[in-house]
Structures are given as C-alpha cells and as structure tokens.
Image (cartoon, rainbow, N blue to C red):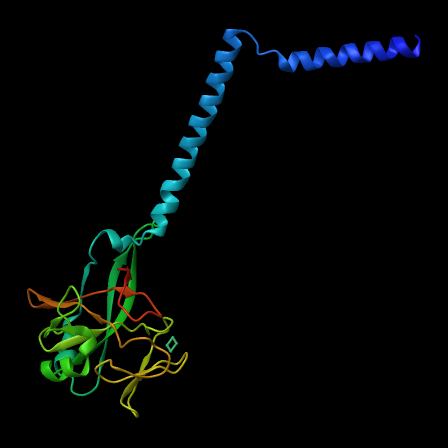
Length: 224
Ligand code: FES
C-alpha cells in the first residue's frame, strides 16, 4: 500500500470512530441512557442519605434532644451531705448513658455537694442568679445544698478539694475556686457549674450535665 492510501485508510477509521461518538443514538437508546443517569443519581442520593443520617446523628449530643435523667444518691451519701459543714462532700453515683452506636451502658461519676446559706451563696455567685432567681433552667440551691460538676470549666480536667487552702484546685493549669465555686485564680473562664438536685420519695437525686469548656456562659454539651 502506498503512503497516501495508508493515510486515507487511517483518516477513514478515525472519522468512523468520531461519528460513532457523535451519533446521538435511537430514541430508545436515549431514553435508556437518561434512565440510567437518573437511576445512578437516585442511588447515589439514597446512599448519601443512609450515610449522612448516622453521621449527623452522632454530631448531635444525645442529651440535647431530651432532658437528662435523674440518678439516685445512696442513703449514706445523702446523710454525709446533710451532716456536711464547711467541707464539700464527694458523692458518687451511677447513671445510664447511650452513645449513638454503642449499646446503653452504666457509667459512674461523682459530683461535689456543699451545704449553703442561701443568701450568702447568692451573694458569692451572682453569675448564677438574676433578680434573686436561678439563671439556669433549674434551682441551683435545693434543700440548702448545691451540687457542683467535678469538671473544670477551663479545659475539662477534674479538680480536687484542697483542705489546706480550703479551695477547689485544678491540677492541670492551676485554676482555683472557693467553696461556693467562685472563680478565684487561674485560666478558667467562669465559676464552677452547679447541677440539678431534687428529693423524690425520700431519695436525693442528681442530674449529670456536661457544660462547654473555655467559654464564659454555660452551654449544655450533653447529659452524659
Ligand atoms: S483544666 Fe482546669 S485549669 Fe485548665
């Protein structure tokens, strides 16, 4: 074959290939292609939705949808709180928690309980009261007791009571708080966070709430 004949044959083949791509196809082929494209989009949408629901669900705090649950204190612990003087009482309790993917589990936590004089406490913690009323959606003082979350409002370490200095002291970055939970020193942006307490049929119950760290206002993060 001459050079010209070979070039002509190659051009012809290319034109055939191009014209095959250019061919829009029959009406039946077009409608099949449209159907396949729509079906692919629909399946992609369903898969995206199936993946998105648990992901979005895991980002919403479980307790954000409902109020927290009440956990009973043992009779002995409540008695030790009733006999408290100027020292806080560490109260341990169990509560049920459920993560998005994990089965319900029983967790143990502790809180600090103090006995207070209502008016003195309100004077020491103006950040918790507005016009003489609790600024939180629950009573901060109940039966002359206040319950504090053990989580430091700075970055979430658990602080301790120092009997020598008569202060709560955080071992992480040195924040200190008075017996009333007033912020005295260190980088914490607010005083200690009070938790709900109630008496139900002779049993004292507390509610666990986790507040956002490093901010001045109390923002609920979760009830677990
Ligand atoms: S976490 Fe308590 S002072 Fe930083």
